[in-house]
Image (cartoon, rainbow, N blue to C red; front, side, top):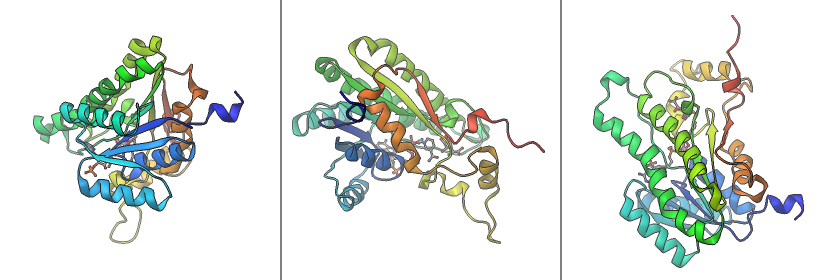
Length: 266
Ligand code: NAP
Ligand code: GCO
Protein backbone atom coordinates (compact mmCIF):
# COMPACT_ATOMS: atom_id res chain seq x y z
CA UNK A 1 0.00 0.00 0.00
CA UNK A 2 1.50 3.36 -0.94
CA UNK A 3 1.53 6.22 1.56
CA UNK A 4 -1.39 8.14 -0.01
CA UNK A 5 -3.53 4.99 0.04
CA UNK A 6 -2.86 4.67 3.77
CA UNK A 7 -4.72 7.96 4.32
CA UNK A 8 -7.66 6.98 2.09
CA UNK A 9 -11.07 6.31 3.67
CA UNK A 10 -12.47 4.77 0.47
CA UNK A 11 -15.12 2.14 1.21
CA UNK A 12 -15.47 3.16 4.89
CA UNK A 13 -18.69 4.18 6.64
CA UNK A 14 -18.19 7.05 9.09
CA UNK A 15 -20.75 8.01 11.74
CA UNK A 16 -20.20 11.51 13.13
CA UNK A 17 -22.56 12.50 15.95
CA UNK A 18 -24.04 16.00 16.14
CA UNK A 19 -22.56 16.89 12.76
CA UNK A 20 -25.07 19.33 11.23
CA UNK A 21 -22.66 22.22 11.66
CA UNK A 22 -19.41 23.22 13.38
CA UNK A 23 -16.57 20.83 14.14
CA UNK A 24 -18.51 17.64 13.31
CA UNK A 25 -19.61 19.00 9.95
CA UNK A 26 -16.06 20.02 8.98
CA UNK A 27 -14.66 16.63 10.01
CA UNK A 28 -17.40 14.82 8.07
CA UNK A 29 -16.71 16.89 4.93
CA UNK A 30 -12.99 16.05 5.18
CA UNK A 31 -13.74 12.35 5.64
CA UNK A 32 -16.08 12.45 2.62
CA UNK A 33 -13.28 14.01 0.56
CA UNK A 34 -11.02 11.16 1.71
CA UNK A 35 -13.59 8.68 0.36
CA UNK A 36 -15.84 7.77 3.30
CA UNK A 37 -19.63 7.46 3.21
CA UNK A 38 -20.98 9.95 5.74
CA UNK A 39 -23.68 9.24 8.28
CA UNK A 40 -24.58 11.82 10.90
CA UNK A 41 -27.26 12.42 13.50
CA UNK A 42 -28.52 15.43 15.36
CA UNK A 43 -30.92 16.16 18.16
CA UNK A 44 -33.89 17.35 16.04
CA UNK A 45 -35.27 17.27 12.49
CA UNK A 46 -34.62 20.95 11.94
CA UNK A 47 -30.87 20.53 12.54
CA UNK A 48 -30.75 17.37 10.42
CA UNK A 49 -32.50 19.22 7.56
CA UNK A 50 -30.04 22.11 7.82
CA UNK A 51 -27.15 19.63 7.88
CA UNK A 52 -28.48 17.72 4.85
CA UNK A 53 -28.74 20.99 2.89
CA UNK A 54 -25.19 21.99 3.89
CA UNK A 55 -23.74 18.59 2.84
CA UNK A 56 -25.68 18.73 -0.44
CA UNK A 57 -24.25 22.18 -1.15
CA UNK A 58 -20.77 20.63 -0.83
CA UNK A 59 -21.75 17.80 -3.19
CA UNK A 60 -21.75 15.22 -0.38
CA UNK A 61 -24.47 12.55 -0.27
CA UNK A 62 -24.76 12.22 3.50
CA UNK A 63 -27.24 10.09 5.45
CA UNK A 64 -28.83 12.14 8.25
CA UNK A 65 -30.88 10.84 11.17
CA UNK A 66 -32.55 12.33 14.23
CA UNK A 67 -31.22 10.73 17.40
CA UNK A 68 -30.55 11.88 20.95
CA UNK A 69 -27.17 10.32 21.78
CA UNK A 70 -28.04 10.11 25.49
CA UNK A 71 -30.96 7.75 24.79
CA UNK A 72 -29.52 4.21 24.71
CA UNK A 73 -32.55 2.60 23.03
CA UNK A 74 -32.64 5.30 20.35
CA UNK A 75 -28.88 4.91 19.73
CA UNK A 76 -29.17 1.11 19.42
CA UNK A 77 -32.06 1.56 16.95
CA UNK A 78 -30.03 4.13 15.00
CA UNK A 79 -27.00 1.85 14.70
CA UNK A 80 -29.21 -1.08 13.56
CA UNK A 81 -30.79 1.21 10.96
CA UNK A 82 -27.39 2.41 9.71
CA UNK A 83 -26.16 -1.19 9.41
CA UNK A 84 -29.28 -2.10 7.38
CA UNK A 85 -29.39 1.01 5.18
CA UNK A 86 -25.72 1.98 4.77
CA UNK A 87 -23.42 -0.66 6.29
CA UNK A 88 -21.36 -1.43 9.37
CA UNK A 89 -19.86 1.67 10.98
CA UNK A 90 -16.07 1.56 10.41
CA UNK A 91 -15.38 4.99 11.93
CA UNK A 92 -17.21 6.63 14.83
CA UNK A 93 -16.61 10.25 15.81
CA UNK A 94 -18.18 11.12 19.17
CA UNK A 95 -18.61 14.83 18.49
CA UNK A 96 -22.04 15.86 19.87
CA UNK A 97 -21.55 17.98 22.95
CA UNK A 98 -22.92 20.75 25.13
CA UNK A 99 -21.43 23.26 27.53
CA UNK A 100 -22.99 25.23 30.38
CA UNK A 101 -20.92 28.14 31.66
CA UNK A 102 -22.14 28.56 35.25
CA UNK A 103 -20.01 29.12 38.39
CA UNK A 104 -19.90 25.79 40.21
CA UNK A 105 -21.66 26.88 43.41
CA UNK A 106 -24.52 28.32 41.36
CA UNK A 107 -24.90 25.23 39.19
CA UNK A 108 -27.73 22.78 39.89
CA UNK A 109 -26.96 19.08 40.11
CA UNK A 110 -29.46 18.61 37.26
CA UNK A 111 -27.45 20.91 34.97
CA UNK A 112 -24.21 19.19 35.97
CA UNK A 113 -25.76 15.77 35.16
CA UNK A 114 -27.07 16.99 31.81
CA UNK A 115 -23.55 17.99 30.67
CA UNK A 116 -22.07 14.70 31.88
CA UNK A 117 -24.88 12.86 30.11
CA UNK A 118 -24.23 14.37 26.67
CA UNK A 119 -20.44 14.80 26.85
CA UNK A 120 -19.45 11.59 28.65
CA UNK A 121 -22.29 9.05 28.97
CA UNK A 122 -23.28 9.44 25.30
CA UNK A 123 -19.81 8.57 23.88
CA UNK A 124 -19.96 5.45 26.09
CA UNK A 125 -23.45 4.58 24.77
CA UNK A 126 -22.63 5.16 21.08
CA UNK A 127 -19.25 3.41 21.27
CA UNK A 128 -20.86 0.42 22.99
CA UNK A 129 -23.44 0.26 20.18
CA UNK A 130 -20.88 0.13 17.34
CA UNK A 131 -18.06 -1.94 18.87
CA UNK A 132 -19.62 -5.44 18.48
CA UNK A 133 -19.95 -5.07 14.68
CA UNK A 134 -16.43 -3.58 14.51
CA UNK A 135 -15.10 -6.66 16.32
CA UNK A 136 -16.91 -8.96 13.87
CA UNK A 137 -15.55 -6.98 10.91
CA UNK A 138 -12.01 -7.10 12.32
CA UNK A 139 -11.33 -3.39 12.60
CA UNK A 140 -12.70 -0.07 13.84
CA UNK A 141 -11.75 3.52 14.58
CA UNK A 142 -13.29 5.61 17.35
CA UNK A 143 -12.42 9.29 17.73
CA UNK A 144 -13.63 11.14 20.81
CA UNK A 145 -13.76 14.91 20.62
CA UNK A 146 -12.13 15.99 23.86
CA UNK A 147 -11.08 19.53 24.83
CA UNK A 148 -8.48 21.76 26.46
CA UNK A 149 -10.69 21.02 29.46
CA UNK A 150 -9.54 17.38 29.31
CA UNK A 151 -6.33 18.82 30.85
CA UNK A 152 -7.13 22.27 32.24
CA UNK A 153 -9.77 23.86 34.42
CA UNK A 154 -11.24 27.29 34.29
CA UNK A 155 -13.99 29.30 36.00
CA UNK A 156 -17.60 28.28 35.14
CA UNK A 157 -16.99 25.00 33.28
CA UNK A 158 -16.83 22.42 36.08
CA UNK A 159 -19.25 19.95 34.47
CA UNK A 160 -17.70 20.30 31.03
CA UNK A 161 -14.16 19.81 32.40
CA UNK A 162 -15.29 16.78 34.44
CA UNK A 163 -16.93 15.29 31.35
CA UNK A 164 -14.07 15.99 28.93
CA UNK A 165 -11.48 14.75 31.46
CA UNK A 166 -13.59 11.60 31.80
CA UNK A 167 -13.79 11.29 28.03
CA UNK A 168 -9.98 11.26 27.85
CA UNK A 169 -9.96 8.29 30.25
CA UNK A 170 -12.83 6.53 28.44
CA UNK A 171 -10.69 6.85 25.30
CA UNK A 172 -7.76 5.14 27.00
CA UNK A 173 -10.02 2.47 28.42
CA UNK A 174 -11.66 1.61 25.08
CA UNK A 175 -8.13 1.31 23.68
CA UNK A 176 -7.17 -0.97 26.55
CA UNK A 177 -10.22 -3.22 26.22
CA UNK A 178 -10.52 -3.45 22.45
CA UNK A 179 -7.04 -2.83 21.05
CA UNK A 180 -6.67 -6.57 20.69
CA UNK A 181 -9.71 -6.58 18.39
CA UNK A 182 -7.91 -4.12 16.09
CA UNK A 183 -9.98 -1.17 17.28
CA UNK A 184 -8.13 2.11 17.69
CA UNK A 185 -9.74 4.65 19.98
CA UNK A 186 -8.11 8.07 20.10
CA UNK A 187 -9.15 11.56 21.06
CA UNK A 188 -8.81 14.95 19.42
CA UNK A 189 -8.46 17.83 21.86
CA UNK A 190 -9.36 21.00 19.97
CA UNK A 191 -8.06 24.29 21.30
CA UNK A 192 -10.31 27.33 21.10
CA UNK A 193 -12.15 26.99 17.80
CA UNK A 194 -14.42 29.51 16.08
CA UNK A 195 -17.86 27.85 16.22
CA UNK A 196 -21.30 28.91 17.53
CA UNK A 197 -20.39 27.18 20.85
CA UNK A 198 -17.62 29.75 21.47
CA UNK A 199 -19.37 32.73 19.85
CA UNK A 200 -20.29 34.30 23.24
CA UNK A 201 -16.57 34.34 24.12
CA UNK A 202 -15.73 36.27 20.96
CA UNK A 203 -18.56 38.83 20.92
CA UNK A 204 -17.42 42.36 20.10
CA UNK A 205 -17.80 44.90 22.89
CA UNK A 206 -20.14 47.90 22.57
CA UNK A 207 -17.15 50.08 21.56
CA UNK A 208 -16.13 47.58 18.84
CA UNK A 209 -13.11 46.24 20.76
CA UNK A 210 -12.44 42.52 21.21
CA UNK A 211 -14.08 40.57 24.04
CA UNK A 212 -11.55 40.31 26.94
CA UNK A 213 -11.75 36.48 26.72
CA UNK A 214 -10.99 36.68 23.01
CA UNK A 215 -7.85 38.74 23.76
CA UNK A 216 -6.95 36.31 26.55
CA UNK A 217 -7.15 33.29 24.22
CA UNK A 218 -5.06 34.96 21.54
CA UNK A 219 -2.39 35.81 24.10
CA UNK A 220 -2.46 32.22 25.45
CA UNK A 221 -2.11 30.63 22.00
CA UNK A 222 1.40 30.59 20.49
CA UNK A 223 -0.22 30.54 17.04
CA UNK A 224 -1.74 33.92 17.97
CA UNK A 225 -5.23 33.09 16.70
CA UNK A 226 -8.36 31.01 17.33
CA UNK A 227 -8.52 27.69 15.54
CA UNK A 228 -10.86 27.04 12.65
CA UNK A 229 -12.90 23.89 12.08
CA UNK A 230 -10.63 23.19 9.08
CA UNK A 231 -7.65 22.90 11.46
CA UNK A 232 -9.21 19.69 12.83
CA UNK A 233 -9.82 17.92 9.53
CA UNK A 234 -6.30 16.57 8.79
CA UNK A 235 -5.87 15.15 12.32
CA UNK A 236 -9.34 13.52 12.14
CA UNK A 237 -8.68 11.90 8.74
CA UNK A 238 -5.32 10.64 10.02
CA UNK A 239 -6.91 9.05 13.12
CA UNK A 240 -9.65 7.48 10.97
CA UNK A 241 -7.24 6.01 8.42
CA UNK A 242 -4.88 3.04 8.19
CA UNK A 243 -2.01 5.54 8.59
CA UNK A 244 -2.73 5.55 12.35
CA UNK A 245 -3.21 1.80 12.89
CA UNK A 246 -0.59 1.66 15.69
CA UNK A 247 -1.78 4.88 17.35
CA UNK A 248 -4.12 3.94 20.18
CA UNK A 249 -5.35 5.61 23.37
CA UNK A 250 -3.75 8.88 22.36
CA UNK A 251 -5.19 12.39 22.70
CA UNK A 252 -4.04 14.56 19.81
CA UNK A 253 -4.29 18.17 20.95
CA UNK A 254 -4.91 20.52 18.05
CA UNK A 255 -4.57 23.76 19.95
CA UNK A 256 -2.05 26.04 18.24
CA UNK A 257 0.30 25.24 21.15
CA UNK A 258 -1.84 26.31 24.16
CA UNK A 259 -0.90 23.31 26.32
CA UNK A 260 2.81 23.82 25.67
CA UNK A 261 2.83 27.48 26.68
CA UNK A 262 3.14 29.20 30.04
CA UNK A 263 1.78 32.47 28.60
CA UNK A 264 3.32 35.76 27.48
CA UNK A 265 5.89 37.16 29.88
CA UNK A 266 4.91 40.53 31.38
P1 NAP B 1 -21.64 22.13 19.50
O1 NAP B 1 -22.38 23.39 19.62
O2 NAP B 1 -20.94 21.63 20.70
O3 NAP B 1 -22.67 21.02 19.00
C1 NAP B 1 -22.50 19.87 18.30
C2 NAP B 1 -23.86 19.31 17.89
O4 NAP B 1 -24.28 18.33 18.85
C3 NAP B 1 -25.02 20.34 17.78
O5 NAP B 1 -25.70 20.16 16.58
C4 NAP B 1 -25.85 19.98 18.98
O6 NAP B 1 -27.20 20.36 18.89
C5 NAP B 1 -25.68 18.48 19.01
N1 NAP B 1 -26.18 17.86 20.24
C6 NAP B 1 -26.25 18.38 21.48
N2 NAP B 1 -26.80 17.48 22.33
C7 NAP B 1 -27.10 16.38 21.59
C8 NAP B 1 -27.70 15.14 21.87
N3 NAP B 1 -28.11 14.81 23.11
N4 NAP B 1 -27.87 14.24 20.87
C9 NAP B 1 -27.48 14.54 19.63
N5 NAP B 1 -26.89 15.70 19.29
C10 NAP B 1 -26.70 16.61 20.26
O7 NAP B 1 -20.60 22.25 18.29
P2 NAP B 1 -19.04 22.45 18.19
O8 NAP B 1 -18.59 23.71 18.82
O9 NAP B 1 -18.75 22.21 16.76
O10 NAP B 1 -18.42 21.29 19.09
C11 NAP B 1 -18.36 19.95 18.69
C12 NAP B 1 -17.62 19.17 19.75
O11 NAP B 1 -16.32 19.72 19.93
C13 NAP B 1 -18.27 19.19 21.14
O12 NAP B 1 -18.11 17.94 21.75
C14 NAP B 1 -17.48 20.27 21.87
O13 NAP B 1 -17.48 20.10 23.26
C15 NAP B 1 -16.11 20.01 21.30
N6 NAP B 1 -15.18 21.13 21.37
C16 NAP B 1 -15.48 22.36 20.87
C17 NAP B 1 -14.53 23.38 20.91
C18 NAP B 1 -14.77 24.74 20.38
O14 NAP B 1 -13.92 25.61 20.60
N7 NAP B 1 -15.84 25.00 19.66
C19 NAP B 1 -13.29 23.11 21.47
C20 NAP B 1 -13.03 21.84 22.01
C21 NAP B 1 -13.98 20.87 21.93
P3 NAP B 1 -27.65 21.82 19.47
O15 NAP B 1 -27.18 22.82 18.47
O16 NAP B 1 -29.11 21.74 19.60
O17 NAP B 1 -26.96 21.96 20.81
C1 GCO C 1 -14.91 27.54 27.36
C2 GCO C 1 -14.93 26.92 26.00
C3 GCO C 1 -14.17 25.64 25.95
C4 GCO C 1 -13.89 25.24 24.53
C5 GCO C 1 -13.10 24.05 24.27
C6 GCO C 1 -11.66 24.23 24.57
O1 GCO C 1 -15.92 28.08 27.78
O2 GCO C 1 -13.83 27.53 27.98
O3 GCO C 1 -16.17 26.82 25.45
O4 GCO C 1 -14.34 24.78 26.91
O5 GCO C 1 -15.02 25.22 23.75
O6 GCO C 1 -13.65 22.87 24.70
O7 GCO C 1 -10.94 23.14 24.12
